Image (cartoon, rainbow, N blue to C red; front, side, top):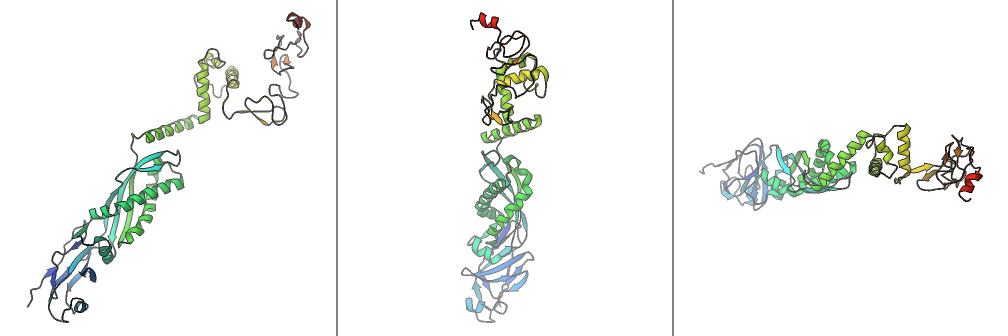
Length: 377
C-alpha cells in the first residue's frame, strides 16, 4: 500500500503564488488547501483543475481526467508527475508604488515644465488564479509582493504620468495646488489602472496617491513659487501687474531731479502711498502720469466720449483736438488759451504751453499790442 503524502502550503501574506517543490505525486496524494487559498494542478503547462479550500485526494475518482491526460488506470493507484500551485486569495492592501524618477509635467496655469514625483499604496486580490498563473507567473517558483511592484511599475508609472497630466490640464489646477485633490486623483487613477490588472486575473481593490511633490531647488519650481508669492502680494494690496509696472516706472522717474515725478518725492511719498489721495498729491501724480506712456492707457474725448489712445492728439471719431477743453466748458480763473486750449491763470499774459499772447485784462484770445510789439510781433 502506498504511503499517503500530504501537499500543502501554510502561506505567507507577501507571497501571492507558490509552487510545491516536489512534482512526483500519486493518486493517493492528499492536497490540503487553506481557507484563503486555491490550488491548481498543472501538467505539461496545462491547468488540469482548480481546488478550493478543503482536503482533496488526487485520484481518478475525484479527478476523472487524470485517466486520459496522465494515462492512469481508472480507480487504480499509481504515481504520476505534475505541478501543484498554491495561490493566495487574501487581500493585500499595502503594495507600495512610486515614480522612480521625476515626471516632467507642464503647469496649466503658468505654462512652465515642473519635475514631479509621486508615491502611494494600492490593494489587490487574486480573483482568477488560473489566469494569474498562466499570464503572469510562468515558470517562476513563487510570485511575491515585490514581483507585483516590479512587473507593474511600468504600468502604473505610465498611467500616473498620463492621469496627473490629464487631470490638472482638464481642471486647470496648478502643480503646487494638486495635493488638495489627492482623493479625487486616487479614484481617477484607479479607474485607469484597474482594467490593466484585470487582464492578469488581479482585482485592484483600491489605489491611493499619498503625495505629489516637486524638488524645492529646481529652477522652475523656484520661479513658480516666486510668481505665486507675487500674485498673492498683489491680490492682498489690490493692484494688478500692469499697475505695479507703472508704479515702478514712477518710482524710477521720481529719482530724476528734472522730471515732474519728483513732485511726488517732494510731497514725502513712497511708492504706493499716493494711491487714493487727492489734493496736491493727486495733481502731482496726474502731471507725472501725463509724462508717462503706460501701455494700454487711454483718454476720453470731451466732445463725443470715445476712447482715445494715450499719445493721440486728435479724437479718431470726431476729430476733436485733445489739447482743448470740452465744448462749452466754463473757464476757471482767466479761461483757456484760444490756440492750444491750455488753462490760463488771471495774471498770465502769455500761454505757458504755446506762447500765444493774451490780453492784459485777462480776457483770453485778445492780443496785447504792447506785449506783442515788445517781442517784435
